[in-house]
Image (tube, rainbow, N blue to C red; front, top):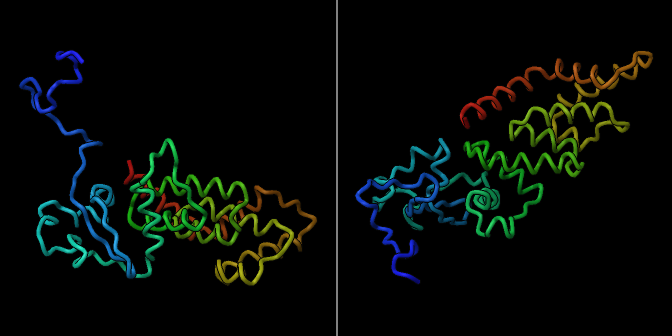
Length: 240
């Protein structure tokens, strides 16, 4: 290769001009150790700085001190057991993919995506939340997730339209709400849905189209849906 080739330029030189760190690919090499249940995880801190929940915890001078939580296996940051080691690992798979994405993207089943959505929502990891919503939406559209579970996912992930559409489907379908479904979505919610079904059956002469049922659902569950939509708007505002 010729000596004047651009590939042989000394990367430490910048012709006297001040150098700038690339905002995406000049990464911190400080690692943090978490413990969830009895399992330890050690990852670079840079992705956790995207979360407002963890950001204040991870100032570089603090983490470089020897006895601070998260600096070693002996002194990890201990997260509540109810988070679940497996759920935490699924979130890390999105934050730190260990395969070349374009060649072999990681795959997730519905339960793993739900775990990712739940934790990313709780901790304000906006890109991971967007990722989980995208792929859960595809499963929902293909009817791969049951109606009661859609309600639970919508509540935990703060996605109002999944809840609203699931309620409408539970009202419109032929079979009634089963005991397991009622237990999942809550007996008060189930009773409200059954009352709407009963009203429709008692007034068969009235043509209850999808628009009318949607209006009834929005009115009946106005408080729940409003709260979740406000949370969704907050995520959008903070992400912007």
